[in-house]
Amino acid sequence: MTRKDRTEGIYSRREVLDESERRQYCQLQLKELLSYAYRYSEDVKKRFDRAQFNVDKFRVLNDLKHIPIIKKKELIFLQSMGPRLGGLLTKDLGELQRVFLSPGPIFDPEDRSEDYWGWTEGFYAAGFRSGDLAQITFNYHLAPAGLMFEEPLRNLSCAVVPAGPGNTNSQIEIMQKLRVTGYVGTPSYLMHLAQKAEEAGLSLRKDLFLEVAFVTGEKFSEKMRSTLEKKFDCIMRQGYGTADVGCIGYECFHKSGLHLSNRAYVEICHPDTGIPLKDGEVGEIVVTAFNRTYPLIRLATGDLGYLDRTPCACGRTSPRLGGIVGRVDTTARIKGMFVYPHQVEQVMARFEEVKRWQIEVTNPGGIDEMILSIEAGQFNQEEELLHLFREKIKLRPILKVLAPGTLPPQIRPIEDKRTWD
Ligand SMILES: [Zn+2]
Image: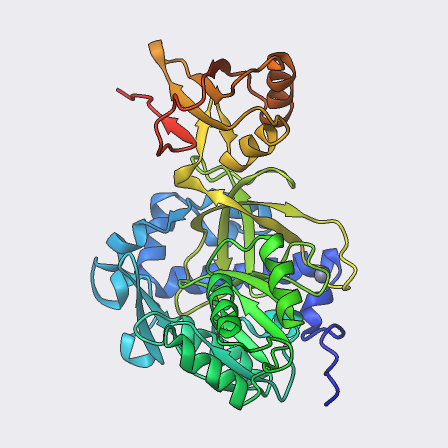
């Protein structure tokens, strides 16, 4: 059986709009969305009025920053405020197709419109093609993922095995007997399937027929990608989205970051002020999907990322998220700078003698102080370490060199001990 070409082609013309076409398209979509939402969503009306935001004054993308962001956590409370999910919806619940419940607990409405969750272009970019048989290992019960990912496969004329999570042995048997070509699920579950299949004596390349995998919901490292791609001889691509808005970004064949979805406008903002940051700066991913039924305007996802506008070899012109680098609530902001555990780790990895490390933040007298403790038997590169730290993280810590075994066995990379009165 010859394999399909999974690398060429673009699903939608919107993926290749030039910069000014894209800007105009987003401006028009946003303008229509804001007017509609102001008219039909009680919550949006309240929010705009409170911020004295006049919909008629919206002209350019930059005007969006005058609308306060909604933190994802606020949805729990807002949805409980009355009918139509506290006025967030612009129609009655009975006019929808489905209502899901995801952890939080937050309700996720799904309308009856075509490609409601917006994943089709992303699945095409990942390499799914007409005639694929895809096994979906996400949950179908209450949470939206299972059914959410059926939608793009149906649109691309693929068939689905709605396997759901668990029952690993049956999953492997199905994959083998039906010659399943596509996988949809978390990367770690695919790894688990691979291990179990190998333990059962199967050859992943000869006894299974996987050609393409779409993964999401977890951190997906390049190491894991290359391991799994080699094991199965398949293409693995990831997507990024939320249960509230659906697709936000997806990878293409060139794996150069996540192309932003064409059905949403994405900003990278300062997590406190909601003010958009410059390209390349790390901030909170704030998304406005062009969704009139559930207009979550400027939803702050809690995820941290940055934008890359350099051209991509695939021909798609949308800016790309250069990966999701962390969560707002697990990242410390010290002296106004973000300090990400993975960045510190990158610095520490350069010094072989450093076995373990921890950052402790305090604020004596209201001023942030950062202590970097490292465990090392012998260490005489203090200046180099501090220099590299400052180059990468833009801050100079107080360095403490400790004997191995001094730090407690279970530590958080960044321990925030600041007090706020
Ligand atoms: Zn691309």
